[in-house]
Image (tube, rainbow, N blue to C red):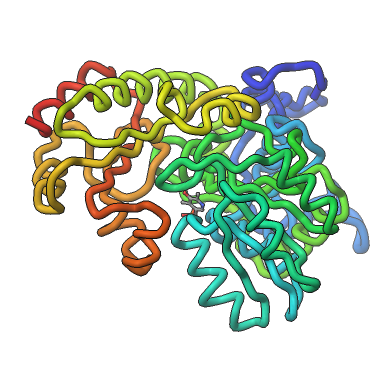
Length: 387
Ligand SMILES: *Cc1c(COP(=O)(O)O)cnc(C)c1O
């Protein structure tokens, strides 16, 4: 695919050029190849490069090409979930005795993977506040191999300064991994800012319809790609052909959806900021957002997540959540439908209360994933539930 094409065009066409050879049907949407194995002419040579679907599948291949194209890098890889993608990065690149430094307010499942699973294989993680780059650098030891950050972070939307972190990574010879799930490839390209690897839970904005689980990895480094791809085949948590098709379909409308997510989120955030029952509102598009300048310097949009503190008790917060009619009370985010949750009792309940306090997750902090419904309907729903 031509390099000068823009994001929206690549999102639709990359990886899916119609096959116009004699006898081919010329599908404009890549077909779903469910076959697990592929016939060949010769014993030693797979005829079209395909042998067995765990190793390589034409539908997953089309998605992986699209992912590389929309990130503007050489390689994309698709896994069965975001955590499977993370596992492939970690197990593919690290060894027993290695250490990584990560931001302290990571997705709970990522922290669980680091602390409960990797630790058992002799891979240690330490945590630092991404707002304090000196602390991040101080946490680096002689056995550190990797830095791992999320931006925007969950649920407080802290911004990691990717350019500065990349400089730290270079200085110490480390691999910088960015989990960019919250902004999607539509609003930020971490590799262009200096990251070595970007990963996403495709379950969120990339899939975008709360109907497929997936994880994706993009990198421009051949050496890292080869090791992660080796692990992908060796361990086997690949994205299935049907899921690959669904994720490709999601990517085609990613730009349209992200624009509407962001427009709606800004309107909702402004409404909440004016409401007497609401305390602090966190959204990168608000003038009050503390890291607005840094965010604007590395992202082209503000995303669809709004976090806010409700005044009152946990019981008041529960009452508010149960009164919502359009906005569903559910974990997850990034789908076309608006979802709301209480991190302290839901997504972040496994984080110790003292730790939550330290990070700034109060018991009445609400995380809202603003969907692409009509914003007036969302605001009316919030207004009646806050009354
Ligand atoms: C959901 C999520 C993950 C995990 O992805 P799954 O697809 O649920 O395995 C990782 N990172 C972030 C930021 C997420 O929101």
